[in-house]
Length: 202
Image 1: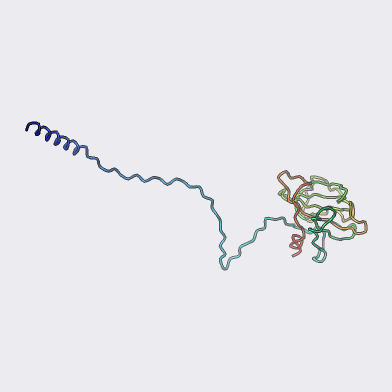
Image 2: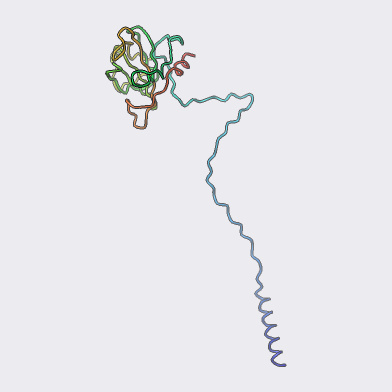
């Protein structure tokens, strides 16, 4: 009997202790959201009544290489075969001695006499992204030199037939190159100048 009373007493004591140290649920902690790196995509929404300009990332010219050019003077020969490769330029037929002009503001990167191109000019635009190439020139404008700054419309040379051009068919061989990271005047990706010249005529 005494043993039974002792057990009951111990149980009651334990109940009292648990009552004192009652475990209550604490506040719920919400995990903070981790920052997520996202790439924003800008979308242009066409809204009636507003004009959205179209920006071209390609080359452009501010002046014609030969004054007074008309569409009938231009013939696209960029993909024509010439020798072992493509022409990758346009030939503008003009009388010998016709003035040739800078098509952009830029710097004369190189004046070069080559076997095929004869007297040539490599004109870099101000951003150093594109090179405008002139070949078969009869001679350069007086005082023109490498490293010289020119403005669009400036006289830089005269039409001729130097290099491998026919002496009886003087013309301006003109093309555009997209320069690489090294900005090497002799190296780049050729771009068809025909549509760019047409755009300049409009």
